[in-house]
Length: 318
Image 1 (cartoon, rainbow, N blue to C red):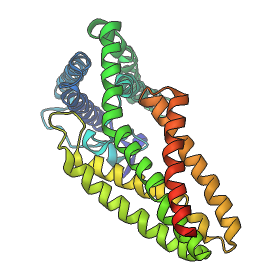
Image 2: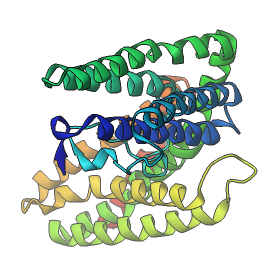
Image 3: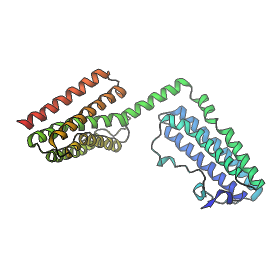
Image 4: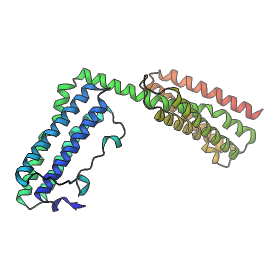
């Protein structure tokens, strides 16, 4: 790997050509991913990809004029300090707001890099080339805003934002909430029944671990097999199953871990406090994302938890 300051003018131009090609493909990949759900925003990124393609053609013309037809392969990862970008397939699926900001940030970062590189070189030719590239990138920083204004007016943006929030709720919040509710509520009975029946925190801990893991595995398979997401838009069944199963296990472990405390009544007090926090979190999620009235959500969750807790205590003391 070489320092940027060690590159020749020919190598710098080749590097710029490769960078423009990479950025253009990133924009095209994002546009393709947005096309089904957000066609207006996808159009913005298709146009950004076309802009990058035009920049690349201009750079190639300049390279051929100065250095001939052979363009050496010089990539960002081959140069110290150059900007590195993950390919889209390596990135978590970004929100619509994130991708709208991505184009401007990419152009801004590239312009900043060229300006910094120009300030650190003493070669007049290289300094001029880097300065020209920085100026060109700076003029492109606001292209995303311009294209967004033209293609994504406020009513369309609001519609896309609502659609994005709906997808987020369907694909992440609902599976996670179902798992958290099941893990937090359904495991109350076996954990507290074992605690009161034996008065041995370790026994309650073992029962809680078994109940949490068993419930998590069961809920993961149930969610994954219930819907492939093709018609409902709920996304990957494997991802939903993993979210549901993971949150189910977490919900059960929350009030199980306090039973690692050797003193029985101390463990009981801490576990009970954790249960209150768990039910509060569930109530908040239902009110925030499921549009349930806050008081109604709290009462419903508290009632369900109290009933299951009461069943566990009754069984454990019988």
